[in-house]
Image (cartoon, rainbow, N blue to C red; front, top):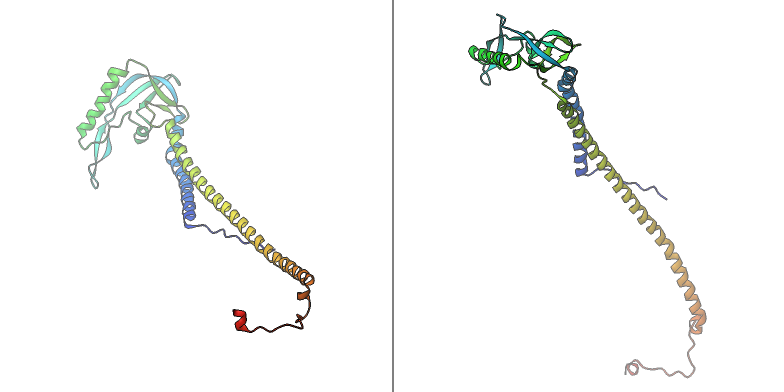
Length: 262
């Protein structure tokens, strides 16, 4: 029996679904690397800091002024100055004095100051923002202990007042790339399985049709042999048909065609 060939070519809709699945897989892998480099690594480092109880020891105003960059439009940038506020606290983890910072971003931006105000063009506005935080710590926080975050390995001389990232950042950094990757994989697998099942159904249909075509020629000779056998039996049973020529009676009267018609 000849080997049945089945076409495995994908239709236009199946080709588009496979391309969509591959795009989602590539997007998930790429976004996982990007988010892992930009957000996941800093978040893991931030979560390594342990919570501790801190109390304000002193607050200082160094004479040094620091620059910051402000924006006033698409093509408008400039620099302004702000005063430095240093808040020293005593943390319960190391039982030593450390410099308090608002969060990790301000610690990286200016490790010498506790607070970096939003940069404004007017220097006085920057100064007023720093003085407001000094007044807040003097009246609300200086006489009470509060929770701070301390990392002995990375920065033993600094503590953080707030964490800029938490566990929700880890969830988003891992969840959405994995969802994209799994969704793309599911689309590709479903499309390939559907195409494979359709090809198998087509192969079974062709095999069934080829089997029926092979059975029909075998049935025809048997019918012919049966007809020939029946013809032979009928000829043997009928003496008139078995004789080579029909005998005419002696006294047969010929009949004209007109009389036969009447």
